[in-house]
Image (cartoon, rainbow, N blue to C red; front, side, top):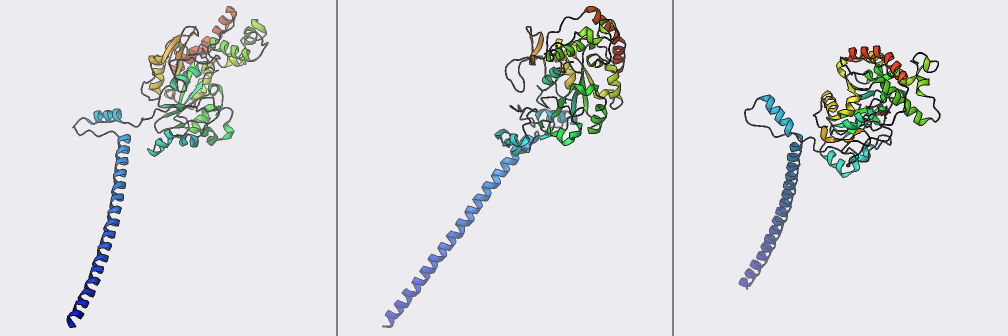
Length: 378
Ligand SMILES: Nc1ncnc2c1ncn2[C@@H]1O[C@H](COP(=O)(O)OS(=O)(=O)O)[C@@H](OP(=O)(O)O)[C@H]1O
């Protein structure tokens, strides 16, 4: 009897310990599973972060050289190896006239990628302005310099400093294209050069603004200006009648816009009261036609850019009689500037041309003196 009770007691105790053992095992299994899964998740996260950091630092800086090279050499090497400019943006479809905005751009996968890399494009005030002169070749210059991956320019003339100054600087900045750190922002408005208030206003925005002026023989410039006006207004009087007081026999009409703009020295003197000469670059409109690459080399040097725009970007279109582009920001096939650039000029009485040349001669001489460049106009 007592043996049977002992056995019962043993069996009951064993069942309890078995159950306890089983319970403990389950607990240990649960804890180790939770611990392990946390560990794996954290490890994965850490690996992902490490990879991202590794990629970022690869994008942001060049690997440092460990050899004992001179410092300058190392810096130059680092600059060469820097992969910051991974994305020479093409900004397809972006026109400033109909301002696409930064937010829209950011939605595109390309811009999401840029943002993830900390490369968020933003609008800033221009570093450089093409201020004139009207009909000097300003559109050609803008289109040529825009070929450079480090230049971003407003496509249409903004006219902030002459027409829309009252709209304020926020308005102006909004008309600039989104740019990345290190890119040069530009705009061109040819009437800036001749508008009295503009130098002071540009100086107020930024006294270090770089200024580019495309100049061309003032007589051909005046004829080009007249040709454009005549193309817009039917029945316009002859050039000879407008350029001289009392018809073609009188004195030169210096109040007539196409004549007045060509007195470059007068306008330049105003700019030189606000900016030092070395902040202005004078581009020859004539050379921009006969040797665009040479003129663009000067422009790129002036803007502190690598000489990326070279002969290979241009071809001479003999039908048009002007250099045209192999490709550009918006188009990948060869093309020329629009129909309004490189128009045929009307025949002008050679005597009128000669009298205008005489009129401009002293002003041109003064302009050569101020700029230190002899443009060789007849
Ligand atoms: N590559 C190329 N293709 C076409 N035209 C060229 C080029 N390079 C310079 N030019 C000259 O640019 C003149 C127009 O000057 P602008 O662009 O400054 O004109 S505007 O003030 O913006 O209206 C324009 O004047 P016109 O010839 O009177 O039409 C051209 O002589």
